[in-house]
Image 1 (cartoon, rainbow, N blue to C red):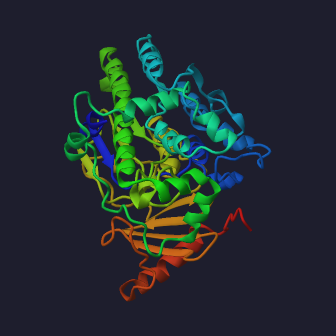
Image 2 (cartoon, rainbow, N blue to C red):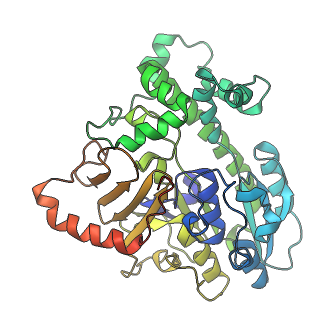
Image 3 (tube, helix red, strand yellow):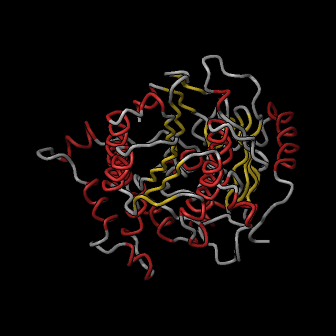
Length: 413
């Protein structure tokens, strides 16, 4: 991953459209908000179908119309059981780990007489989600997900191992990651967070019962799983280079969501905290600025990735509202004109990010309205809603929120 960043731009303020797998992946490949079809979480039984106009303009179909060969391998997790073919891709691998890397290298080794778009959807470090599920499994589904023969459990167990020959004292003293600075629970945290965790009791139990040592082991395993996928990405990049494509290919690395990884004593996702909602976004390639760290522009991988690839292919901007091509931000002197406000949604509420501020409204519980000043409070430990210094900005954000989210899409209404 570091090699991609060195050769391109790292967007430090990139957010997913929704910090949950299925709606986020829907946005990545369609450029649309999940709420456009009522998709706010991984449940989709209430959705009868996805409009044909959305699918026909999905990433694969758009790039095919521009003359690209489109291929997909790895994790799907699309709504309504959709396949890569529904989004306009051919499937080249059903694996999402080491075999996926090998299958991608094989694809890259072929003779390509036309430009190609290859999506490699690696699973990790997502296996970390199974740590708390197994530790507090109660329901039949949780017990099924915790079977020792599952590859996810085997990967977690391997990631939890400490280095050979190292004592516990040496490990926790010199190697294991420390607790994050924002480990504590904010005193004015939105009650919606606790309500959300109660719907999945293992999340609540991890918050209540994990010791500080348990949380550090979580962070250790998460880092090890990240190393796993980093190696797989490295093998794929080596294949790109060895087959002569590196100097003519744009490489994008991003994720559908993050993981709380002990911040605010939480694991998993769904929340609007940056650990879950802010995602990596690296873009490198010929003719693009190198070694740039963009800390200024707030971008959305779910809204902006599809227009960016379309711009690379010479397509007209999509009709879907909100998204913009990132290409103007990838020059050595990036354009100053950019979207001021970026939306994020979830099944527990809605959020906008503008400048250094995050403004949130949750659907349930107390402390529904939240304001965070990231410049003063990067760990999101306090609600700045009533700060006298922010009242003028608060009014602006409330007006902007009403413009960005004209409908509440409240699943509990």
